[in-house]
Image 1 (tube, each protein chain N blue to C red):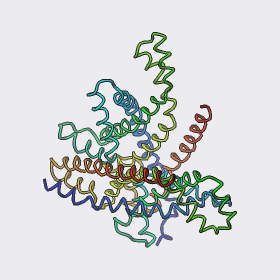
Image 2: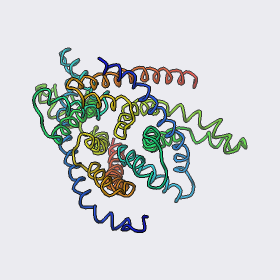
Image 3: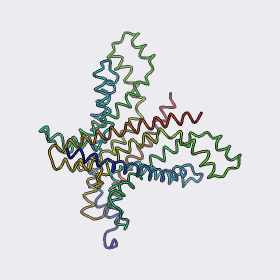
Image 4: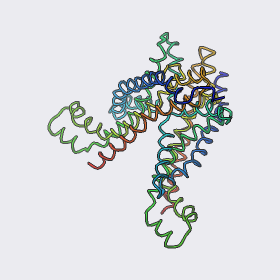
Length: 222
Length: 211
Protein backbone atom coordinates (compact mmCIF):
# COMPACT_ATOMS: atom_id res chain seq x y z
CA UNK A 1 0.00 0.00 0.00
CA UNK A 2 2.76 2.39 0.95
CA UNK A 3 4.55 1.57 -2.31
CA UNK A 4 1.77 3.31 -4.22
CA UNK A 5 2.37 6.54 -2.36
CA UNK A 6 5.23 8.96 -2.73
CA UNK A 7 8.19 8.07 -0.53
CA UNK A 8 8.67 9.63 2.88
CA UNK A 9 11.19 12.25 1.76
CA UNK A 10 8.99 13.49 -1.08
CA UNK A 11 6.07 13.59 1.34
CA UNK A 12 8.18 15.53 3.85
CA UNK A 13 9.42 17.94 1.17
CA UNK A 14 5.84 18.62 0.06
CA UNK A 15 4.56 19.52 3.51
CA UNK A 16 7.72 21.00 5.04
CA UNK A 17 6.78 24.61 4.17
CA UNK A 18 3.43 24.23 5.92
CA UNK A 19 5.12 22.83 9.04
CA UNK A 20 7.73 25.57 8.88
CA UNK A 21 4.97 28.18 8.93
CA UNK A 22 3.58 26.43 12.01
CA UNK A 23 7.03 26.46 13.63
CA UNK A 24 7.09 30.21 13.01
CA UNK A 25 3.87 30.57 15.00
CA UNK A 26 5.28 28.36 17.79
CA UNK A 27 8.36 30.59 17.98
CA UNK A 28 6.20 33.74 18.01
CA UNK A 29 4.16 32.31 20.90
CA UNK A 30 7.41 31.53 22.75
CA UNK A 31 8.81 35.01 22.18
CA UNK A 32 5.61 36.79 23.26
CA UNK A 33 5.17 34.58 26.35
CA UNK A 34 8.74 35.41 27.41
CA UNK A 35 8.45 39.09 26.50
CA UNK A 36 5.39 39.61 28.70
CA UNK A 37 5.98 36.80 31.20
CA UNK A 38 9.52 37.67 32.32
CA UNK A 39 8.78 41.23 33.54
CA UNK A 40 5.66 39.92 35.29
CA UNK A 41 7.77 37.13 36.78
CA UNK A 42 10.22 39.72 38.11
CA UNK A 43 7.35 41.72 39.63
CA UNK A 44 5.98 38.56 41.28
CA UNK A 45 9.45 37.66 42.55
CA UNK A 46 9.78 41.09 44.17
CA UNK A 47 6.16 40.77 45.39
CA UNK A 48 6.82 37.50 47.23
CA UNK A 49 9.63 39.29 49.12
CA UNK A 50 7.63 42.48 49.76
CA UNK A 51 7.38 44.01 53.22
CA UNK A 52 3.58 44.34 53.02
CA UNK A 53 1.98 41.08 54.04
CA UNK A 54 -1.02 41.48 51.69
CA UNK A 55 1.28 41.96 48.67
CA UNK A 56 3.38 38.98 49.74
CA UNK A 57 0.41 36.63 50.14
CA UNK A 58 -1.24 37.76 46.93
CA UNK A 59 2.01 37.21 44.99
CA UNK A 60 2.54 33.78 46.53
CA UNK A 61 -1.05 32.79 45.67
CA UNK A 62 -0.69 33.96 42.07
CA UNK A 63 2.61 32.06 41.71
CA UNK A 64 1.41 28.85 43.37
CA UNK A 65 -1.78 28.68 41.29
CA UNK A 66 0.22 29.31 38.11
CA UNK A 67 2.74 26.57 38.96
CA UNK A 68 0.22 24.16 40.43
CA UNK A 69 -2.30 24.17 37.60
CA UNK A 70 -1.23 22.46 34.35
CA UNK A 71 -0.42 24.91 31.52
CA UNK A 72 -3.12 23.17 29.47
CA UNK A 73 -5.76 23.99 32.11
CA UNK A 74 -4.61 27.63 32.18
CA UNK A 75 -5.04 27.78 28.39
CA UNK A 76 -8.53 26.31 28.54
CA UNK A 77 -9.57 28.69 31.35
CA UNK A 78 -8.48 31.67 29.23
CA UNK A 79 -10.03 30.25 26.06
CA UNK A 80 -13.41 29.34 27.57
CA UNK A 81 -13.39 31.96 30.32
CA UNK A 82 -12.71 35.27 28.54
CA UNK A 83 -15.87 35.04 26.37
CA UNK A 84 -17.86 34.88 29.64
CA UNK A 85 -16.35 38.28 30.49
CA UNK A 86 -17.70 39.36 27.08
CA UNK A 87 -14.30 39.51 25.42
CA UNK A 88 -13.66 36.93 22.73
CA UNK A 89 -10.12 37.37 21.44
CA UNK A 90 -8.81 35.00 18.78
CA UNK A 91 -7.19 31.75 19.90
CA UNK A 92 -3.65 33.07 19.32
CA UNK A 93 -4.22 35.90 21.82
CA UNK A 94 -5.70 33.43 24.32
CA UNK A 95 -2.59 31.27 23.94
CA UNK A 96 -0.30 34.28 24.51
CA UNK A 97 -2.24 35.22 27.67
CA UNK A 98 -2.23 31.67 29.05
CA UNK A 99 1.43 30.99 28.31
CA UNK A 100 2.39 34.42 29.70
CA UNK A 101 0.79 33.56 33.04
CA UNK A 102 2.54 30.18 33.18
CA UNK A 103 5.84 31.89 32.28
CA UNK A 104 5.40 34.57 34.93
CA UNK A 105 4.61 32.02 37.65
CA UNK A 106 7.58 29.74 36.90
CA UNK A 107 10.18 32.41 36.16
CA UNK A 108 9.28 34.30 39.34
CA UNK A 109 10.68 31.36 41.32
CA UNK A 110 13.93 31.25 39.32
CA UNK A 111 14.29 35.02 39.59
CA UNK A 112 13.58 34.93 43.31
CA UNK A 113 16.30 32.30 43.66
CA UNK A 114 18.63 34.59 41.72
CA UNK A 115 17.79 37.66 43.81
CA UNK A 116 18.33 35.70 47.02
CA UNK A 117 21.76 34.62 45.80
CA UNK A 118 22.95 38.24 45.67
CA UNK A 119 25.63 38.78 48.28
CA UNK A 120 24.08 40.78 51.19
CA UNK A 121 27.39 42.62 51.47
CA UNK A 122 26.88 44.32 48.13
CA UNK A 123 23.38 45.42 49.19
CA UNK A 124 24.79 46.83 52.44
CA UNK A 125 27.54 48.54 50.48
CA UNK A 126 24.96 50.14 48.20
CA UNK A 127 22.96 51.36 51.22
CA UNK A 128 26.16 52.65 52.81
CA UNK A 129 26.71 54.69 49.65
CA UNK A 130 23.32 56.28 50.39
CA UNK A 131 21.60 54.76 47.37
CA UNK A 132 17.80 54.75 47.60
CA UNK A 133 16.05 51.37 47.93
CA UNK A 134 14.80 51.69 44.35
CA UNK A 135 18.31 52.31 43.05
CA UNK A 136 19.71 49.42 45.10
CA UNK A 137 17.20 47.12 43.39
CA UNK A 138 17.76 48.57 39.97
CA UNK A 139 21.54 48.86 39.90
CA UNK A 140 22.70 46.22 42.39
CA UNK A 141 20.24 43.42 43.16
CA UNK A 142 18.47 42.89 39.83
CA UNK A 143 21.54 42.90 37.53
CA UNK A 144 23.42 40.43 39.76
CA UNK A 145 20.35 38.29 40.46
CA UNK A 146 19.46 38.04 36.78
CA UNK A 147 22.88 36.63 35.99
CA UNK A 148 22.50 33.85 38.54
CA UNK A 149 19.08 33.00 37.12
CA UNK A 150 20.21 32.86 33.47
CA UNK A 151 20.72 29.07 33.10
CA UNK A 152 17.38 28.30 34.80
CA UNK A 153 15.62 30.86 32.60
CA UNK A 154 17.18 29.39 29.46
CA UNK A 155 16.00 25.94 30.53
CA UNK A 156 12.55 27.36 31.10
CA UNK A 157 12.52 29.02 27.66
CA UNK A 158 13.02 25.56 26.14
CA UNK A 159 10.14 24.23 28.25
CA UNK A 160 7.76 27.02 27.26
CA UNK A 161 8.70 26.55 23.60
CA UNK A 162 7.59 22.92 23.96
CA UNK A 163 4.48 24.05 25.85
CA UNK A 164 3.38 26.14 22.86
CA UNK A 165 2.33 22.78 21.37
CA UNK A 166 -0.53 22.84 23.91
CA UNK A 167 -2.04 25.75 21.97
CA UNK A 168 -2.98 23.10 19.40
CA UNK A 169 -5.81 22.10 21.74
CA UNK A 170 -7.33 25.60 21.56
CA UNK A 171 -7.10 25.65 17.73
CA UNK A 172 -3.99 27.83 17.23
CA UNK A 173 -2.30 26.87 13.91
CA UNK A 174 1.13 26.23 15.31
CA UNK A 175 3.48 23.37 14.39
CA UNK A 176 1.56 20.54 16.09
CA UNK A 177 -1.82 21.73 14.78
CA UNK A 178 -0.50 21.94 11.22
CA UNK A 179 0.99 18.45 11.50
CA UNK A 180 -2.31 17.17 12.84
CA UNK A 181 -4.23 18.75 9.94
CA UNK A 182 -1.88 17.16 7.40
CA UNK A 183 -2.17 13.81 9.23
CA UNK A 184 -5.94 13.74 8.89
CA UNK A 185 -5.98 14.76 5.23
CA UNK A 186 -3.11 12.54 4.05
CA UNK A 187 -3.58 9.56 6.42
CA UNK A 188 0.18 9.56 6.98
CA UNK A 189 0.28 10.44 10.68
CA UNK A 190 3.42 8.42 11.38
CA UNK A 191 5.61 10.35 8.96
CA UNK A 192 4.20 13.81 9.56
CA UNK A 193 4.39 13.64 13.37
CA UNK A 194 7.91 12.24 13.05
CA UNK A 195 8.89 15.28 10.96
CA UNK A 196 7.16 17.67 13.37
CA UNK A 197 8.94 16.00 16.29
CA UNK A 198 12.31 16.35 14.55
CA UNK A 199 11.61 20.03 13.89
CA UNK A 200 10.93 20.62 17.59
CA UNK A 201 14.06 18.67 18.46
CA UNK A 202 16.09 20.72 15.96
CA UNK A 203 15.37 23.73 18.18
CA UNK A 204 15.32 22.20 21.67
CA UNK A 205 18.36 19.89 21.48
CA UNK A 206 20.97 22.49 20.42
CA UNK A 207 19.53 25.08 22.82
CA UNK A 208 19.72 22.66 25.74
CA UNK A 209 23.38 21.96 24.92
CA UNK A 210 23.93 25.71 24.85
CA UNK A 211 22.18 26.02 28.23
CA UNK A 212 24.52 23.40 29.70
CA UNK A 213 27.54 25.27 28.33
CA UNK A 214 26.35 28.58 29.79
CA UNK A 215 25.68 26.89 33.13
CA UNK A 216 29.21 25.43 33.18
CA UNK A 217 30.72 28.83 32.35
CA UNK A 218 28.79 30.63 35.07
CA UNK A 219 29.64 28.03 37.73
CA UNK A 220 33.32 28.08 36.78
CA UNK A 221 33.45 31.83 37.26
CA UNK A 222 32.08 31.71 40.78
CA UNK B 1 -22.75 20.51 40.23
CA UNK B 2 -22.77 17.27 38.28
CA UNK B 3 -19.69 18.66 36.53
CA UNK B 4 -17.87 18.73 39.89
CA UNK B 5 -18.76 15.09 40.49
CA UNK B 6 -17.56 14.15 37.04
CA UNK B 7 -14.20 15.80 37.82
CA UNK B 8 -13.89 13.92 41.10
CA UNK B 9 -14.77 10.64 39.38
CA UNK B 10 -12.03 11.33 36.80
CA UNK B 11 -9.28 11.68 39.45
CA UNK B 12 -8.45 7.94 39.37
CA UNK B 13 -7.79 8.23 35.62
CA UNK B 14 -5.41 11.12 36.17
CA UNK B 15 -3.58 9.09 38.82
CA UNK B 16 -3.58 5.97 36.63
CA UNK B 17 -2.00 7.83 33.70
CA UNK B 18 0.55 9.45 36.03
CA UNK B 19 1.53 6.24 37.82
CA UNK B 20 1.55 4.21 34.59
CA UNK B 21 3.74 6.73 32.77
CA UNK B 22 6.11 6.98 35.74
CA UNK B 23 6.47 3.18 35.87
CA UNK B 24 7.06 2.88 32.10
CA UNK B 25 9.53 5.78 32.28
CA UNK B 26 11.34 4.27 35.27
CA UNK B 27 11.79 0.90 33.56
CA UNK B 28 12.98 2.46 30.28
CA UNK B 29 15.26 4.93 32.07
CA UNK B 30 17.38 2.25 33.80
CA UNK B 31 18.92 0.81 30.59
CA UNK B 32 19.20 4.35 29.17
CA UNK B 33 21.09 5.64 32.20
CA UNK B 34 23.40 2.62 32.23
CA UNK B 35 24.01 2.88 28.47
CA UNK B 36 24.92 6.51 29.04
CA UNK B 37 27.81 5.29 31.25
CA UNK B 38 28.90 2.59 28.82
CA UNK B 39 32.59 2.23 27.92
CA UNK B 40 31.63 1.92 24.24
CA UNK B 41 31.33 5.40 22.72
CA UNK B 42 28.60 4.61 20.14
CA UNK B 43 26.38 3.09 22.87
CA UNK B 44 26.85 6.28 24.91
CA UNK B 45 26.06 8.39 21.86
CA UNK B 46 22.87 6.52 20.95
CA UNK B 47 21.62 6.63 24.55
CA UNK B 48 22.34 10.36 24.68
CA UNK B 49 20.46 10.91 21.41
CA UNK B 50 17.44 8.92 22.63
CA UNK B 51 17.38 10.91 25.88
CA UNK B 52 17.59 14.20 23.93
CA UNK B 53 14.72 13.18 21.63
CA UNK B 54 12.53 12.00 24.52
CA UNK B 55 13.00 15.32 26.31
CA UNK B 56 13.23 17.58 23.28
CA UNK B 57 9.96 16.64 21.54
CA UNK B 58 6.79 17.95 23.23
CA UNK B 59 4.71 15.26 24.99
CA UNK B 60 1.69 16.13 22.83
CA UNK B 61 3.64 15.22 19.67
CA UNK B 62 4.74 11.91 21.20
CA UNK B 63 1.12 11.11 22.06
CA UNK B 64 -0.19 11.97 18.58
CA UNK B 65 2.68 10.02 16.98
CA UNK B 66 1.93 6.94 19.06
CA UNK B 67 -1.86 7.11 18.97
CA UNK B 68 -2.35 8.05 15.30
CA UNK B 69 1.01 7.03 13.78
CA UNK B 70 1.81 3.61 15.18
CA UNK B 71 -1.47 1.99 14.01
CA UNK B 72 -0.11 2.45 10.46
CA UNK B 73 2.60 -0.03 11.48
CA UNK B 74 -0.14 -2.34 12.76
CA UNK B 75 0.66 -1.43 16.37
CA UNK B 76 -2.74 -0.59 17.79
CA UNK B 77 -3.55 0.56 21.28
CA UNK B 78 -6.35 2.42 22.99
CA UNK B 79 -6.06 6.03 24.12
CA UNK B 80 -5.19 5.13 27.71
CA UNK B 81 -2.37 2.80 26.65
CA UNK B 82 -1.06 5.34 24.12
CA UNK B 83 -1.21 8.08 26.75
CA UNK B 84 0.73 6.02 29.27
CA UNK B 85 3.31 4.92 26.69
CA UNK B 86 3.78 8.43 25.26
CA UNK B 87 4.19 10.14 28.62
CA UNK B 88 6.32 7.14 29.66
CA UNK B 89 8.75 7.82 26.80
CA UNK B 90 9.08 11.47 27.83
CA UNK B 91 9.51 10.46 31.48
CA UNK B 92 12.21 7.95 30.50
CA UNK B 93 14.29 10.81 29.09
CA UNK B 94 13.97 12.96 32.21
CA UNK B 95 14.32 10.06 34.65
CA UNK B 96 17.44 8.78 32.84
CA UNK B 97 19.07 12.15 33.56
CA UNK B 98 17.98 11.96 37.21
CA UNK B 99 19.42 8.41 37.42
CA UNK B 100 22.67 9.62 35.88
CA UNK B 101 22.92 12.30 38.54
CA UNK B 102 22.18 9.70 41.23
CA UNK B 103 24.88 7.36 39.97
CA UNK B 104 27.37 10.24 39.85
CA UNK B 105 26.60 10.92 43.51
CA UNK B 106 27.86 7.45 44.53
CA UNK B 107 31.52 7.81 45.54
CA UNK B 108 33.98 6.13 43.17
CA UNK B 109 35.40 4.21 46.14
CA UNK B 110 32.16 2.23 46.39
CA UNK B 111 32.63 0.88 42.86
CA UNK B 112 36.26 0.06 43.61
CA UNK B 113 35.30 -1.64 46.87
CA UNK B 114 32.81 -3.85 45.00
CA UNK B 115 35.56 -4.91 42.63
CA UNK B 116 38.02 -5.50 45.45
CA UNK B 117 35.47 -7.72 47.18
CA UNK B 118 34.97 -9.63 43.92
CA UNK B 119 31.25 -8.85 43.74
CA UNK B 120 29.60 -9.51 40.37
CA UNK B 121 28.27 -6.66 38.27
CA UNK B 122 24.64 -7.44 39.09
CA UNK B 123 25.20 -7.93 42.83
CA UNK B 124 27.20 -4.75 43.20
CA UNK B 125 24.60 -2.80 41.22
CA UNK B 126 21.59 -4.12 43.17
CA UNK B 127 23.10 -4.40 46.66
CA UNK B 128 25.62 -1.59 46.82
CA UNK B 129 25.26 1.04 44.12
CA UNK B 130 21.53 1.45 43.56
CA UNK B 131 20.49 1.89 47.21
CA UNK B 132 22.96 4.76 47.52
CA UNK B 133 22.06 6.24 44.15
CA UNK B 134 18.36 6.01 44.98
CA UNK B 135 18.87 8.07 48.12
CA UNK B 136 20.51 10.85 46.12
CA UNK B 137 17.80 10.67 43.45
CA UNK B 138 14.78 10.76 45.71
CA UNK B 139 14.14 14.51 45.71
CA UNK B 140 14.49 14.61 41.92
CA UNK B 141 12.14 11.65 41.48
CA UNK B 142 9.51 13.18 43.77
CA UNK B 143 9.65 16.52 41.96
CA UNK B 144 9.34 14.77 38.62
CA UNK B 145 6.37 12.71 39.79
CA UNK B 146 4.53 15.80 41.01
CA UNK B 147 5.20 17.50 37.66
CA UNK B 148 3.94 14.40 35.88
CA UNK B 149 0.55 14.65 37.64
CA UNK B 150 0.10 17.93 35.79
CA UNK B 151 1.54 16.63 32.51
CA UNK B 152 -0.93 13.73 32.55
CA UNK B 153 -3.52 16.36 31.54
CA UNK B 154 -1.98 16.23 28.05
CA UNK B 155 -3.47 12.74 27.60
CA UNK B 156 -6.84 14.50 27.27
CA UNK B 157 -5.77 15.53 23.75
CA UNK B 158 -6.03 11.95 22.47
CA UNK B 159 -9.26 11.33 24.38
CA UNK B 160 -8.17 9.78 27.68
CA UNK B 161 -11.12 10.54 29.98
CA UNK B 162 -9.08 12.08 32.80
CA UNK B 163 -9.91 15.35 34.57
CA UNK B 164 -9.14 17.85 31.82
CA UNK B 165 -10.93 15.81 29.15
CA UNK B 166 -13.98 15.71 31.42
CA UNK B 167 -13.76 19.46 32.03
CA UNK B 168 -13.52 20.28 28.30
CA UNK B 169 -16.62 18.18 27.65
CA UNK B 170 -18.56 20.27 30.17
CA UNK B 171 -17.07 23.56 29.00
CA UNK B 172 -18.10 22.87 25.39
CA UNK B 173 -21.68 22.03 26.40
CA UNK B 174 -22.56 24.68 28.94
CA UNK B 175 -21.65 28.25 29.72
CA UNK B 176 -20.82 27.55 33.37
CA UNK B 177 -18.68 24.57 32.34
CA UNK B 178 -15.71 26.87 33.03
CA UNK B 179 -16.13 26.08 36.72
CA UNK B 180 -15.19 22.46 36.06
CA UNK B 181 -11.74 23.79 35.04
CA UNK B 182 -11.44 25.64 38.32
CA UNK B 183 -12.37 22.40 40.08
CA UNK B 184 -9.78 20.49 38.04
CA UNK B 185 -7.10 23.13 38.76
CA UNK B 186 -7.91 22.93 42.46
CA UNK B 187 -7.58 19.14 42.42
CA UNK B 188 -4.15 19.37 40.72
CA UNK B 189 -2.96 21.83 43.34
CA UNK B 190 -4.42 19.78 46.19
CA UNK B 191 -2.93 16.53 44.82
CA UNK B 192 0.56 17.98 44.63
CA UNK B 193 0.49 18.91 48.33
CA UNK B 194 0.19 15.39 49.88
CA UNK B 195 2.70 13.98 47.38
CA UNK B 196 5.06 16.81 48.22
CA UNK B 197 4.72 16.11 51.95
CA UNK B 198 5.19 12.38 51.36
CA UNK B 199 8.35 13.07 49.37
CA UNK B 200 9.69 15.31 52.12
CA UNK B 201 8.91 12.62 54.71
CA UNK B 202 10.64 9.93 52.66
CA UNK B 203 13.65 12.16 52.19
CA UNK B 204 13.90 12.80 55.92
CA UNK B 205 13.68 9.05 56.66
CA UNK B 206 16.33 8.24 54.04
CA UNK B 207 18.62 10.84 55.60
CA UNK B 208 18.26 9.19 58.98
CA UNK B 209 18.94 5.70 57.63
CA UNK B 210 22.09 6.86 55.86
CA UNK B 211 23.70 7.88 59.14
